[in-house]
Image (cartoon, one colour):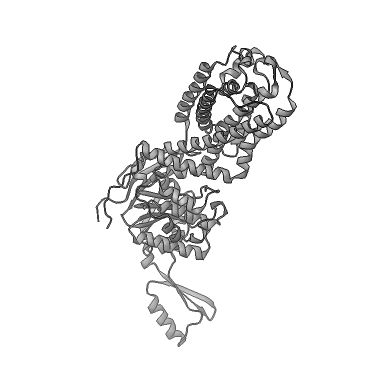
Length: 276
Length: 283
């Protein structure tokens, strides 16, 4: 005889937060046990910083060296790699392997899956920025800010950057049809963005049309936001907008987060194939 | 028993463009029953089961699973249903205990993760990474994740594919245990002896239709099917199909004056019956 007890799945924001936290802990653990993903995601910007940071030591405007300009830019690349690239590839792979299908078959609140992913991204981004910053400071490229509002800028640019990058990564994960093709679909997008966002070159050195295209995407604004944290105020007039443009940075990153959210909600699928 | 069956399907139809995967299928699974769906590849077993699991929409028909239409699954309903899908990805870098304990968190009244790990026979592998498990061990982990939430209804889609005979026996014991505790089980399988070993009733699907539903002992008129009596006669092997095998053997014994050389008496196996049904359908 079956007893008819009313079983109700956990619900409410507290349950989502608890389950999302548990997923985040699991995701971080899983990530750090996969050596190739640690290397691919975390070490890439470090290697670039070490290579370009030592050879591209030519002077730029404002009495700076390019390596000083490059250090905040590669931090932005690190953030975008750990959020956008990482999630767009990882979620496509998990979908292909049927891991999402398995989760879909449980009473897990769907939001918990995304909370867990963003927590994992946050841990990686903080770690990545600490490593890149430590190397940059040790090599004398940049120095740690001394006034508090530069730290506040670092914080909000990072938070908005992670939000925009993660949400866009979740949305973009649906573009690749299979897990195998995901890196081939995602990596070129990230590389092109890096080139047109003023990471490997001074942004204002681009032809104007290319600047407009670059300024449309979030990476340019994350890089510019980080430059405002680590470069002296004397460089601000040489930025494309003639200043650090904090308001516009927040607006563009916030707008991409909202657009990404709408796209992600409309296009996210738990399975590939028919009836997805 | 409550009147409402665990699963009730009427006239289920599923099409993909012009291809008809399921064509007017009826099915009823009682609460506490272990029901096996048999059928060749492409018969519509997995399509049917995935509709019942809430994964796929249907084209037509009525479906009720634990009183709910699985086309609109709720999380409360998911908490009452356990699913073991066909081949599916694992969390390779995590250990067995990490994965099972984590999945327990999704459910309102889960089983104890360590007890589940023991009952699926993975106690020795509790701290092993799932990526290092053998195929059979992974399948046990799948079952552990299917049963961790203490489901009222458990779907098992070809659960023992790739098992060696010993692992299969142990697995059957596990499923019998769940069944004895009152879990309703819907099993799909290629192995007829598996259906015979586990199921109270079996249904045979071919070309998207249910050909017959019966107990394993009576499927296809097996209980009163003709028995084949064979022996070595003076001019070679002889045999006769009969409804009265005992009388036939007595007659032979009298004719040979004692032992009948090379005597065999064989009732058709479930497999014989099944193959006959399937081949009749495909003609």
